[in-house]
Length: 83
Image 1 (cartoon, helix red, strand yellow):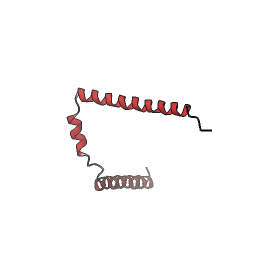
Image 2 (cartoon, helix red, strand yellow; image 1 turned 45 degrees about the horizontal axis):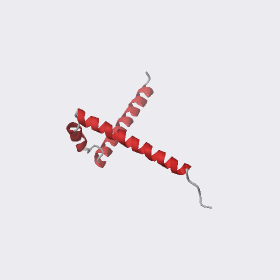
Image 3 (spheres, helix red, strand yellow; image 1 turned 90 degrees about the horizontal axis):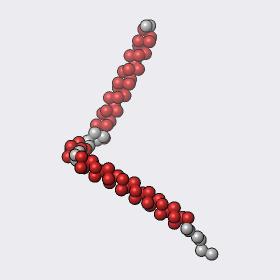
Protein backbone atom coordinates (compact mmCIF):
# COMPACT_ATOMS: atom_id res chain seq x y z
CA UNK A 1 0.00 0.00 0.00
CA UNK A 2 1.12 3.50 -0.58
CA UNK A 3 1.95 5.89 2.21
CA UNK A 4 -0.96 8.21 1.40
CA UNK A 5 -3.51 5.40 1.81
CA UNK A 6 -2.01 4.41 5.16
CA UNK A 7 -2.05 8.02 6.36
CA UNK A 8 -5.68 8.40 5.22
CA UNK A 9 -6.73 5.19 7.01
CA UNK A 10 -4.93 6.27 10.17
CA UNK A 11 -6.55 9.70 10.08
CA UNK A 12 -10.05 8.34 9.50
CA UNK A 13 -9.75 5.72 12.26
CA UNK A 14 -8.41 8.33 14.69
CA UNK A 15 -11.29 10.66 13.84
CA UNK A 16 -13.90 7.92 14.32
CA UNK A 17 -12.33 6.87 17.63
CA UNK A 18 -12.36 10.45 18.86
CA UNK A 19 -15.99 10.81 17.77
CA UNK A 20 -16.93 7.68 19.73
CA UNK A 21 -15.09 8.93 22.81
CA UNK A 22 -16.87 12.29 22.61
CA UNK A 23 -20.23 10.52 22.31
CA UNK A 24 -19.45 8.36 25.35
CA UNK A 25 -18.39 11.36 27.43
CA UNK A 26 -21.51 13.26 26.39
CA UNK A 27 -23.68 10.30 27.41
CA UNK A 28 -22.00 10.06 30.79
CA UNK A 29 -22.27 13.79 31.42
CA UNK A 30 -25.98 14.00 30.52
CA UNK A 31 -26.93 10.92 32.58
CA UNK A 32 -27.87 8.60 29.72
CA UNK A 33 -26.54 5.54 31.58
CA UNK A 34 -28.00 6.22 35.03
CA UNK A 35 -31.03 3.92 34.97
CA UNK A 36 -30.15 1.89 38.05
CA UNK A 37 -33.70 0.79 38.82
CA UNK A 38 -33.98 -0.98 35.46
CA UNK A 39 -31.59 -3.72 36.50
CA UNK A 40 -33.09 -4.09 39.97
CA UNK A 41 -36.63 -4.28 38.59
CA UNK A 42 -35.51 -6.77 35.97
CA UNK A 43 -34.13 -9.08 38.63
CA UNK A 44 -37.07 -8.56 40.99
CA UNK A 45 -39.93 -9.01 38.51
CA UNK A 46 -38.48 -11.63 36.18
CA UNK A 47 -40.47 -14.63 37.33
CA UNK A 48 -42.97 -16.55 35.20
CA UNK A 49 -45.97 -15.17 37.04
CA UNK A 50 -44.85 -11.55 36.62
CA UNK A 51 -44.15 -12.09 32.93
CA UNK A 52 -47.60 -13.64 32.47
CA UNK A 53 -49.16 -10.66 34.24
CA UNK A 54 -47.24 -8.28 31.97
CA UNK A 55 -48.51 -10.09 28.87
CA UNK A 56 -52.09 -9.96 30.15
CA UNK A 57 -51.76 -6.24 30.86
CA UNK A 58 -50.51 -5.63 27.31
CA UNK A 59 -53.44 -7.60 25.89
CA UNK A 60 -55.91 -5.61 27.99
CA UNK A 61 -54.38 -2.34 26.80
CA UNK A 62 -54.60 -3.46 23.19
CA UNK A 63 -58.23 -4.56 23.60
CA UNK A 64 -59.15 -1.27 25.28
CA UNK A 65 -57.60 0.74 22.44
CA UNK A 66 -59.42 -1.34 19.83
CA UNK A 67 -62.71 -0.92 21.70
CA UNK A 68 -62.16 2.82 21.90
CA UNK A 69 -61.47 2.99 18.15
CA UNK A 70 -64.62 0.99 17.38
CA UNK A 71 -66.75 3.23 19.59
CA UNK A 72 -65.32 6.34 17.94
CA UNK A 73 -66.03 4.90 14.49
CA UNK A 74 -69.61 4.11 15.53
CA UNK A 75 -70.14 7.65 16.85
CA UNK A 76 -68.79 9.13 13.63
CA UNK A 77 -70.91 6.78 11.55
CA UNK A 78 -74.12 7.66 13.40
CA UNK A 79 -73.42 11.38 13.54
CA UNK A 80 -76.05 13.61 11.96
CA UNK A 81 -75.73 17.38 12.06
CA UNK A 82 -78.66 19.46 13.26
CA UNK A 83 -80.94 20.98 10.63
